[in-house]
Length: 530
Image (cartoon, rainbow, N blue to C red; front, side):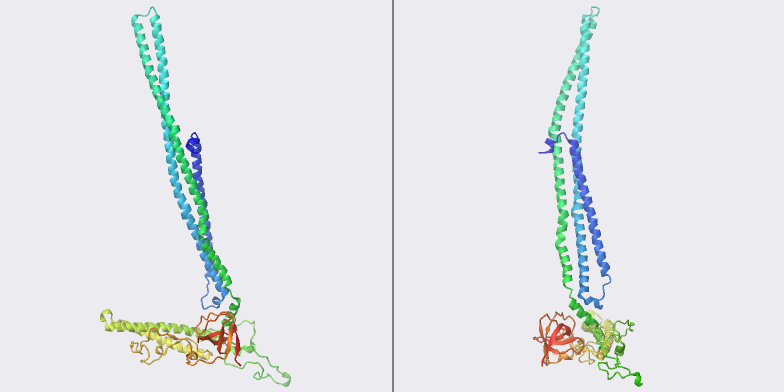
C-alpha cells in the first residue's frame, strides 16, 4: 500500500505528517545534546574530584606513600580519572554519531521535502490555471450562444414584420448568421478546453500527485529508519565503552584487594622504629636516711648514660607527651637512631648516584677531547676545558660529601651496606682513576663499559668465603626486596640465616643459589642451630 493510491486526496494530511516527523528528529537531536552536556559535566566533575584529592600527593620521601592503603586510594583516583575519560568519550561519540549526523541528514530531508511540495504546488497551480481557462471558455460560449439566439429571433421577427423593408430583413439575417457562427466557434473552443482540462486532471490525480506522495512516503520511511538507527546508537555508544569502564571498576576492586594491613603495620614499624630501649625502673629515694638520690647505675633494666641526646631523655620519657619539634641538622642527629641510620643511608645513596652521573659525564668529555685532539676538524679540544674543570670540581665536592656522610653513618652504627663505587672511580692514583687530578682523560684505565658501576654490598658481601649458616627461617609474608641490600622472598620460602638481627629489625639470609641479602626479622620465623 502506498500513499499515492490510498491517500490521493489527503495532501494536507501528508504535508502535516511529514512536518511532524521532521520535528520529532529535531526533538531527538536536542534530547541527545542535553544528554551529551550531562555526560560532559559528569566527566568534568569526576576529573575535578580526582584532582581535588590527588593534588596534595605526597612525595616519595613521605611515609604514607609506602602504605598499601594509601597507594590503593591513589589507584582509585587514577581509575576514576580514566572512568571520567570514558564518560567524555561517550559524550563525544553521541555528539558525532547522532547529533551532528542526524542534523545533517535532517537538513537534507527538509530540502527534499520542500522540493516535493513545490512540485505538488506547481501541478496544483497548473490544473487550476487550466480550469480557469475552461471556465472562461464555457462562460463565453454561454454568452455567445444566447446572443446568437436573440439575433435569430430578431431576424425571424423582422422577416414577419410587413412594415420591415427587404434591407432590414437581410441585415437581421446576416447578424443572426454571424452570431451563430461566433457561438459555434465558442462551442468548439469550450469543447477543446474541456478535453484539455480532463486530460490534465487525469494526469494530476492518477500520475503526478501519486508520484509525489509516494516520494514523500519514501522520504518519511527513510527518516524513520535513520531515527531508529539513532535510537540504537544511543545505547550502542555506551555499550562500546562498557568493557573499558568495567576495567576501571575492576581496577578499583583490585586496589581494595591489594590493601595489606599486616604489611602496612610492618612498614609503620620500619619507618618509625626509634631504636630506643624502654625506660628502666626508677629507684626508691630514701630521704629518711639522708640520701638525696639513689644511683641509677645499679638499677636493673635502667639504660646506661649515653652521649646520645635522645637517650638522655629516656628516663623522663612519656608515651603520649607532646614533644617540641627538634632542630633539623645536616647529619640527622635530631632523629632517633634507627631513623637516623636510614636517612643517612638514603642520603648517601643519592650522593653516589649523583656522583656516578658526574663521573660518566667526565669520562664522556675526556673521550670527546681525545677525539678532538686526534681529529681537529671535528672540534677544538680547548672548548671542553671549562666543562671538564667544572665536572672535576663537582666530583671532588660530591666525594667530600660522600666521605662526610659515610663517617656519620659509621657513628650512627650503620652496617655500611650503602652502595659504593669501584676503586677505579674513587682513588686519587692517576694510574687507576679514569681522570687525573687536573681533569685530563687517561686511556690507561678506561673501564670496561659492561663493568658494574656499584659493588652490591659492603665488605661483608665481598668476602670470597661464604659464612656458614647459623640457622634457618621460614617466610610468613611476601617481601619485595626492592631496596638495595635486601632480598625478595615469598610466603612459605625457607632461607638460611647467615647473621642474626643486631637490633635494627633486619636479618641477613642466603638462598641455596648463593644470593644473600637482608629481610625484615618480623616477616619470618627463625630457628637457630644448637
